[in-house]
Image (tube, rainbow, N blue to C red; front, top):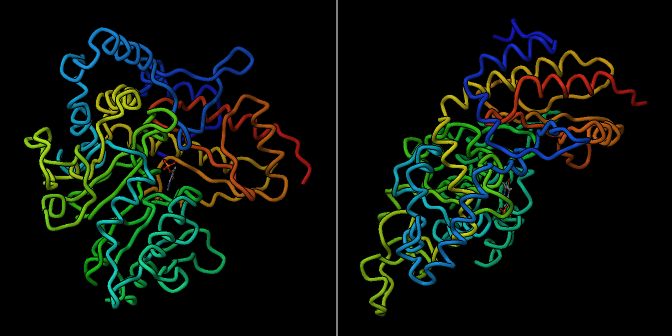
Length: 424
Ligand SMILES: *Cc1c(COP(=O)(O)O)cnc(C)c1O
């Protein structure tokens, strides 16, 4: 495939013409720049709005106006069972059984709730292992969980760093560190795709290593969900959580998600914080004493569904269901491959792509590490109607997402880059 790529507008357009997912672009709203759609490469940060959201939001408002409290049962999607409508589609996206997933809360909140169940340190087994350079919210969550149990983060958190001179972490270094920590290790908690480098870790191998020393293993899938096909059930992952506003296009602060393997989700001896929505649905309204968790991941729910926060999620998951993760991944490999090819033709600027070149180790994002002139390049891109993402100190992240980006978008980006005059 790569050998056939060409750095020309004609070539890019010819690729768009044969792209079976091309029509999905029409289902999204693009921000405007000088009266035209921007080239949007920020779906890894905030996905675009599906056009159907407005209609569905209005329908929900109408149901509330019309039915009041009766909307719990009479709304088009009854609010009483609203969270159920996501399970099947989410399960396909993350490779799980329906009862292993639930849409609830937000990401960091879910991470805390799940750690309350799966980080239960003892005098001997109290350590947590994570990648260095994790997303700040995850770092804070891990640090404060450790402190809550009375441990010193310096001692209790093992961070795995890249080798000297490298930007990414070898899976084998994580696995070796897990084995070395042995029975001092309570939990392995890794970001499935690192937000900064775009590196995708070997979730199955890491899970296996964690289990071999008797530790639990969980992943933050914020940058993996909707980006790379996952197989959480078969990989035997213990738990995972994610947000829905990045690749899942479900709007700012959109509802998060969680996965708990059925081995654990159906094990009622595992402690979970209780709330009425996690209780057995048959006795939820009996208003009796004693929390009886229902089966599966849904038992980690606290509250009734934040319906308005879930409308966009519903709209977006429909599009994922129609497109299919296999097809999306197929296009993604080709599209990001094209972007990488184009970036390698750029000779007037100096930067390094720090995302792995091995396509099994990345999703659609590419991270470009610049020198001090990086900020000027970023500002010039913005000026030209390209929405990319700037990360301190010197990284521009771009995500050609297969759901709505095109080969022509990639070419436009390349065209702007090659015409830039930035003094170094
Ligand atoms: C985006 C992201 C978050 C954001 O957390 P919220 O609770 O949704 O604000 C957390 N962790 C990672 C790894 C992320 O990429």
